[in-house]
Image (cartoon, rainbow over all chains, first blue to last red; front, top):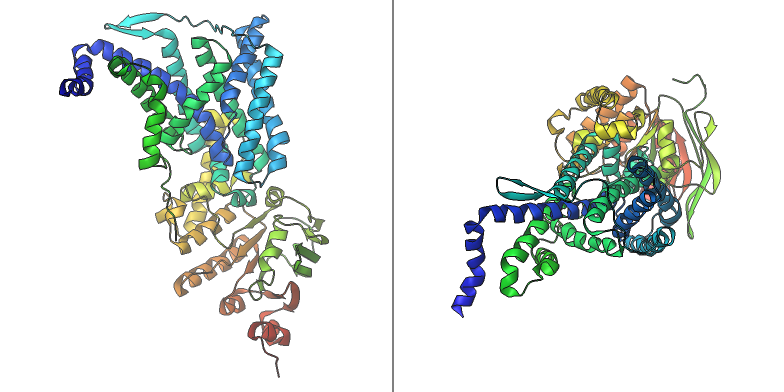
Length: 312
Length: 260
């Protein structure tokens, strides 16, 4: 018995030390996957910060963006033009959502807005498949899914590109939120609707901006995931992986979404590779949720969330 | 500023109803340019409702609000702000997670323009504009003597300072009309004196017209040019502090007893 326990507790660490290059490879794979989770989580955070709406449809927005891009590419539209058109479609979608969903429901309970985004979820899913078809599609944007070696560590070019893109996007969003006029307006709306209105920030414009930015983030996430595993319905399910990321990072924190994604990405890869064989595998499927559950018990506001203090 | 003569703000017979409660019943008042006007009255008299109508949060079902000679009865709050009306709130509505500096910079949002893309990359004109407005904001910070707390998140400040930051944010918009909802509530004597001085200075240095709601009668009588008294949604007195002080209806409303 004690041998078995020892094998589970100590064995994997011995493996890590004995083959450092392989360990680095696993960690890099985890970081790449984690950044992708972060991108999806970022879409949630942006909308939640600015409007207090938990956007259930974020995953489907990723799918919809990828479907639109693939659909355009299949019809022979060159990559740059297809990208621009997809961006325009996502911005148009943001306008439509503000006009048709958010504006009629202004001042309603959060749960009602949440239900509305569930409706949006089903609509976008059906609409996307109606326009672009439901079969699995290959998304090829010209980055080869090849690997190269650096000091004995194998690195996947596509994952590397995805990781770098995510990092750049996140930096730009960070600066945008902290230092600019619109960024401040977004934070202001998140903090106090009434005060924001009183100094002349139009809520409608802000909503269009956040949903547009969330749409653009969805495009990037859609491209990266789509290029890796094909554009298909299951793409919208990565939203489920973003939930634990949000719980870890805090629902309102941009850095939280990044760090949370990385922890989960790296954690589940390490778990799968080193502990998987010992307990029968499939750790990657539940690791994120168990970690989230632990966080809910110990630190419900997440790593970067504001501490929840009940005043009595 | 504008060549228009006549009063800056005219409220003409407005009524507001919440269910069965008539919160405002044909209230009228006129605020000339450059004046400090006080709106007083017992709790529930409709003072804040009146302020909310002027700033576009509520809309009266009858009557008119004219600002600078134009009918502005049905504008939404952001449009009211764009006209040059700034306000503070009874319960302090700051952006709690943002620093004092960011709070005040946000107050300047209507004075700034820019394109989304330039903003996003924080480049060229966007950056220059940011610095220009920063300079103005620094002047307000000096004016209200809040240099020491400029980097502090607004939510962590003591109440009196929060009120001061809220005033700073309103001033950042360079308003023509400043609406203050109980600017001195919950303050100690010293803080009240400071706030009085700031209000008088804003009025004399920037020429800002001010309408304030206040409970402290001493303060009201000291700083206002003009006092309007509301009770149960009606105007019961309107005049200089001396006139209002002697008004029998005011004594009734405040003391709850018939005068001799």
